[in-house]
Amino acid sequence: MSGLMETEKSTAAAWFEDLRDQILAAFEGLEDRQTVGPTADLPAGRFTQTKTTRTADDGGDAGGGLMSVMRGGRVFEKVGVNTSAVFGELGPAAQKAMAARGVPGMEDDPRFWASGISLVAHMQNPHAPAVHMNTRMFWTPHGWWFGGGSDLNPCIEYAEDTAHFHSVQKEHCDKHGTEHYQRLKDWADEYFYIPHRNRARGVGGIFLDDHNTGDWEADFGFIQDIGRAFLPAFVPLTEKRMAQPWGEVEKDKQLVHRGLYAEYNLVYDRGTKFGLETGHDANAVLMSLPPMAKWV
Image (spheres, one colour):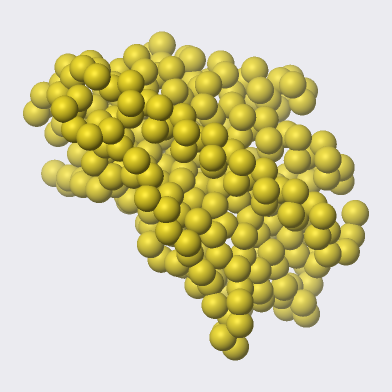
């Protein structure tokens, strides 16, 4: 497949937005169902939405998106769900990064288009795990690909929660072949590792990038199922933990763990680097940072 792929681009972008709307509704539903526990007397959280824009070097339109953020809810201390579709020309640093990933010709024609959904949730209850999810499509004149995944980041680990999260992801990956899940799990374990701390940032999940088999429809179906796995993998864990009692000791563990999450996203995360290098809205790019963290 070659050319501008306008139909495929619009199809992918529309689906990312549909997944966003499903997630927003599910998360606001969790807020409504939080009727017991330390935060039950707070108002049920609701998302505030802000359009984001990106401007080209010549002042022209370079795309944008929608930032949906909830702060200070009963269940979610801070959660952001961003969608975007951006385009333009990659700068020299991004061109070199693409060349290092095996994408030829970017110096001659640096045009790009990218769309996706990115989510990070930081919870009120320390027993409820934080979570990250992302699915995206990237196009250049020299190639296209999908990427994404999701990973669970509890500060207090429960083996049964980890097992559920992974089992749902495996079920959705297996629809496209039983060889995928273990490869994507191993990739997540490698990608979400914090070298300077010699530890993983969480209990893993699935991750892939540069995914292009040459069959756009099949690859799009695969990335859709990676996105579809998110709600059934995560929501039951939140429902189980959101009313569990907690105190200062548990909250302290949560704040320290959030420090690890912030370190990873600021130092290693590809999406953070790409967003800042290509001039996207800094508030949207840094939406993943926790509202509070602690270093000891």
